[in-house]
Amino acid sequence: MDGTSRRGVLATLGAAAAAAMSWGFGPRLLGRSSEDGQMQTSAKTKTRTPRRLRGVYPPGPEHWVGDGFLVKTVFWPQIDPQMLSPFLLLDHAARRRFEASPWRRGVGEHPHRGFETVTFAYQGEIEHRDSAGGGGRIGPGDVQWMTAASGVVHEEKHSQAFSERGGDFEMVQLWVNLPASKKMSEPRYQPLLDREFPRLTLGAAEARLVAGTLDGKTGPARTHTPITTFDLRFHAEGSSEAELPSGWTTLVFPLEGDVTVGPDRQPIPSRHFGVFDRDHDGPVQLHAREGARVLVLAGQPLHEPVVAYGPFVMNTREEIVQAFRDYQSGRMGRLL
Ligand code: MN
Image (tube, rainbow, N blue to C red; front, side, top):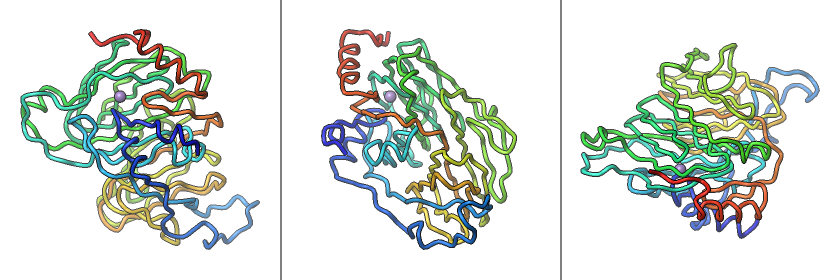
């Protein structure tokens, strides 16, 4: 891990992962390693043995992003950018009540280049506005998929209506990397509404499919590389299985409630994240002891260098320097 990039990370909407980094939080393996499991068949056999966890990691400390988002940074690139690829960072603002406010809380104007920010609203309302003309308001169940690519300047705030009345608020922001060939492409903004997401029943859980293909259905988000993203809701104790491509990165994040994985019940505590073995082709099998909500992220790894610095994620240090120059000279646009 390179010390410069470690120091350099800022977070989702502002300075979040920097805080996590400065606390020196590193990955920590919980539960059992993949060696002491119960592989019952040889590796060559196409087995239906559930996929195994490679590791479980605790989130960083809770911190404010602007004055609107009290988040834990669940993962960030410096944990291991190749293990996480194509995903970069995940911030979770757990459910929290905001009183009515005479101003709109959130994060003011800031740039991004080289990746996508994906915002999942679970409760409350968020308004984005960006220099590429994108923007809009999303409410409970909606998702904004913003491709910063060559560069946008944007702000992320509670909506006017939510600020006036207050209420419960919960959101997730995910950063998805772009391949080198797409980092300087045109920005794109996809507002995705809750009602557009196909619903699937996967065992005891109900899935909402945001992106990619699952069980014969396809989510509405357009992605630059193959990605499958969905959330699961367990209403009671039970198990759920999902078939996801082998060779892909598969990450599981319980937003609320603890889950366990596979027949030997490896634990992923609430707000930790689990990384699955990439080489295993078995189904991802999750169990909940009671109600739980889980975000599942699967994507084809990029196998490219990751240089993450502040709000920019590129492939080389030179490209990061160029990004700062382009932002400062106004080439990423301005908010009007
Ligand atoms: Mn942002």
